[in-house]
Amino acid sequence: MRSRELGEGLRAAMERVGLNGKQAGRLLGWPQSRVSRLLSGKRYGNEIESRVRARLARQALLSRSSRCHFVFFIHEFALRLPVGGAEVMSEQLHHLLRLSVRPYVTVRVIPAAAGAHAGVAGAFMLIESAEFAPVVYLDSETSSLFLETREEVAAHRLVLKTLASTALDERESRELIAEWAIDLYGRREDHHAHAGAGRDCLAHEQLQHQ
Image 1 (cartoon, one colour):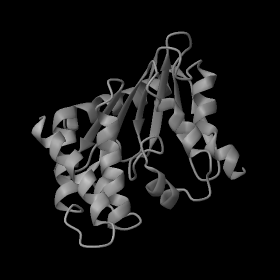
Image 2 (cartoon, rainbow, N blue to C red):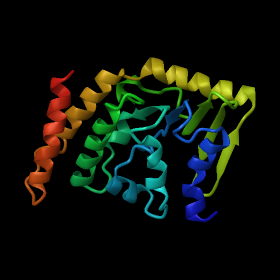
Image 3 (cartoon, rainbow, N blue to C red):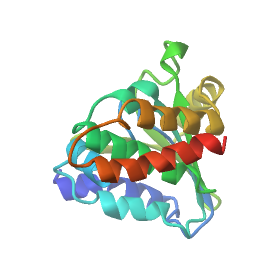
Image 4 (cartoon, rainbow, N blue to C red):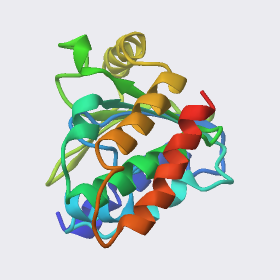
């Protein structure tokens, strides 16, 4: 499968159930060991999937006019795993903070202290639409797979339900992301210091609003 075809997989999956950001619906994602492609900043995304050029098209699904509700569970390790250096990680954490305050985007962190959890088997997305039956979308390096039977959907819905009981709530997740943005990447002394200071203000604001 060509990289463009792979990159367009998620958009095709959503269109398959009539969900393109204009219709009401819901997408629940468990990206497991990395930040979801939908949530990745430009440079973080380039580091993760430099061969896939459709990332920005996918992120249009998170436009301000979206009628979909996006729910993302992200493991702490995915947020702490260094990708592309301190500047890229700082940019990514602040990008997550900006997205997390949108009313139709929910970001919840699975803390490492929770230990083994229901999502260890692998990443997936559950896509729901008011007009079509729900589907589970699986994406790998070489292919995409749709799971559509009631049993398959129910099993993955149970995983998401269990993750929801394990994850920090939205406020706690934003607070933790903001703390990491400041403590891990907010005190750099390099030629990007001015830009970093501006992002640190965002993280401090998020902490103050909790």
